[in-house]
Image (tube, rainbow, N blue to C red; front, side):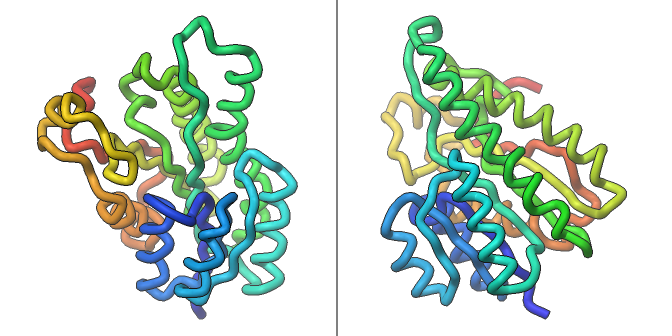
Length: 230
């Protein structure tokens, strides 16, 4: 039986590369994005798609329910999302902090609530996080804090649902070429280049597959050596 994967924020960049990789491996896909571009991609991949936002609980519910109606099962979920607000640390408003946590943490918690009861044969959830979860950056303050919280949630999830063979891991990209970086930033990366969405997709593909069946609760940096902390 074909396996079924949900990918959010899938219309471009890392999300689109992940969708394309999973489609090439035979997954039936259910895709969501705010952009109308999701329709074009889903048509090319023979996937189901809907427009919606990862910070909207009703959109997530509709995505999961429609996926189950169409395919009858959910084996893997890739929680990709947009970028939280940026700004100076103490100038960011309460509303911006709350918005960022909704976007970068609550999206995963809400999705897990929806899909875990449906993963009767086990499953894999992979969250697209950021290198800031390991080495917080003042350039991305809300993202760094929210994604560190996501790493903690992922540890708790792994402890709670490992016995049900439902795994959760985080992918922590550095500077990926879907968002061009300044030359000064590229020069600070040991590999002297940005990563590609396709490289991220390869890692995600491994983590949703049975090849990683004994891996859960982990953070995986894919950053060209950018993060120096141990």
